[in-house]
Length: 462
Length: 72
Image (cartoon, rainbow over all chains, first blue to last red; front, side, top):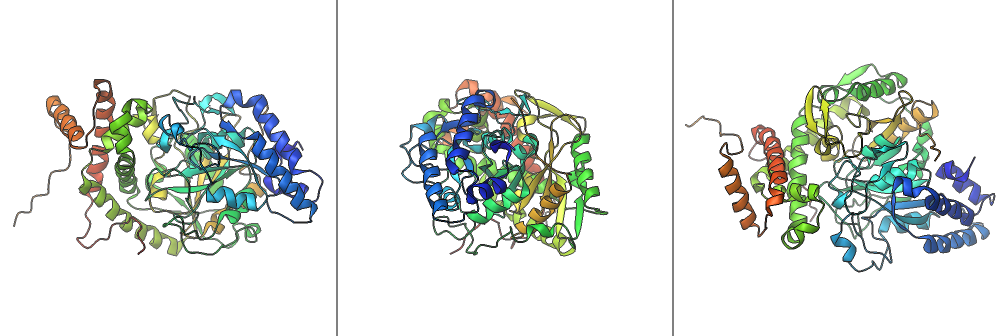
């Protein structure tokens, strides 16, 4: 198999066994990015010199018989992660005037300690307030499976870079669905861990009380490998839990055996196109799921997440809106200005509902170990598409792509998005949701679905 | 005892009143609203107001604890 389509696990194995060098893996990645990224616009910064230097260090470690779980694996990060030597632009025009960073994000450091090699920074929706993958400053990221369609956002470049075969892994952020939406639209596996599990130190925030970071990949095992490498407490992020590494790789082959799984109905069976339900049903059948469950008040939860996002996002950017409103992406700017006018009482009520909704979900997890639900209401819309019809209602695309992801991230539950291909068209994702701190359960289910061929990523040829 | 439910949030029916709200809200936060921004801002004020209807209609107890994370 060509290097670019190897999984991270297989690539690292080949490097550890000296069948392939990290230098070769990185050269292959850079070559592919250089040849084809004009079609996908995934990267904003290709860091070839740094990547070659890091790869050489990995090869020296291999020569000393050091085994690394991610030896020589090329990865890239959404450009809201600090990368030493470049400004953290967070998809904006304004931030690119910042000084180059002096340190990498903690998660980059942790991946590189395990042998992975950073090759670049990736396109994203401005300040992460986006579900489409459109960006007026850097251009739109294009879906590698059909360049006329959205990648999804806001981790748009992360979805495009992994789906295009440029890298084995990418890091993204997920405030309301920004890992799960690009995973759905680009046909990838994506992990949004429990809120507070992975440190957010040295990354640019959006909504502090909702922000998560996590990986996207082409296999469930690769998610687990990278996730395990990134876990652990970190004093730099006050939200990061003081939990030691709870390794998922040793658990993953257990699959779904013995797990009580239910398909979410009610809110999660409305407002979607038929393919969203068909994909969820396909996954349910493969897992022999006969039970359904309802996560009550999911609609109010989503409305609460919407308010908190608008309000906290506006608070973060208020000074920039005062001084440089004209330099924002207009779609983002107008949402943020509207958010600045929300009465505080509305947002505090939304935060109260959050605690209530968390208790509702806990009750449901007394009966079930894992819940499944659609990831997005549709497959990837066309780039530039402003509206779509959901249950007969004409709705704006931009704020409504995340209707199924928002209630879940609102209470910080871990989710693996798994890719389903219903026909020869574009893919669509399904959410595998687990109780807080049980990423292992969602990864086990995703792994089984992949092993059985129900969920998979597909290579693209340019 | 007054048992009337409080009115849920809604946008002013009078377009001039909505314009005035945007002006006042912007002034309070020190924002300058270019005329070109106003149509987009109105769409999003409408969206957050609709979200707030569901949120404020939801009954929570006085002692319900809000959910943002803080660990002393």
